[in-house]
Image (cartoon, rainbow, N blue to C red):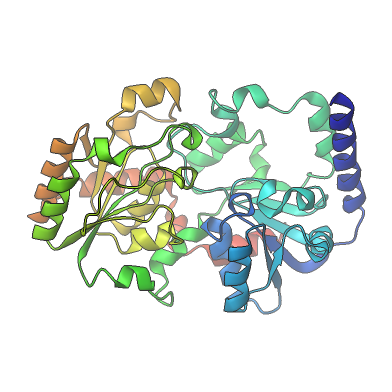
Length: 390
């Protein structure tokens, strides 16, 4: 067992150093997201910008998911299965690498073949809750040791993390164990979807036939290990009747980690659970009239649309104690009503129906904390141009 681990690590570092000596192609960029399983998030939207607007560059998506591979193939987008020999050759020659969660987004073996490339961690959201090495529950005890840091300092000497404001640039230094020069304050490409009218509305959302959309998008509980029980959180019969009365559909999209949670115990015409459906979170938010969430960073994206947000923080004390701590006092950076049970939540929806929105000014103030002014609009072009100059 121990010998096997030593051999695996030795192989990894050998590949990293060998790949560092391979000449890189200046116009070759590779992208991946969510452990290779999803076509989504910041890498997706930057990838599409490059494919559609920069014909001088060669952008390639890498995935381990055959459904994603087929989807992109059908769209005519450059895509490779991450465990293929062609993907390995491409990874070794790419000068630029973009991911959403970490190096494994492009495949484990490929992550050992990108030595000396410009590796850009676009990340997957502006954090309210503590992330990476600031997260004492999950990562704090897994900091890389001195030897690992030393061995990776050469092949990953061009590693960068993208932030959205000065506040988060400072946070990312500790969260990702990087210095100031490795943090690029350039914004989130995934939010370009909110402002780009060229993206068509999905057939799935079109089936709602013009109804108002309320989206419930909770964050994960313990990386998905603790299910989110919809049947106990909501009076589903009452919620369904309310939605039908108000010509509204209640859409549920849990975090990716909860994709295997049990489904609703019964069928409700006005309540739709899209957790396991391949609809992008940005698309759902763009067409939502109200967002309900808890501690998810999705509300930070949604603030760019300046629409009502309701915070259903029914387990706040437990969450803070057992799951994640936060970078800010919760009340100060969540511009919306706080609800701890279904009755309070329904009251807020009743207020929304009659046009009440008491948090407009607070949303604008909090938005300025999370986004510098230049990052409150389309940003893919500025991200790309800055990276190409690194």
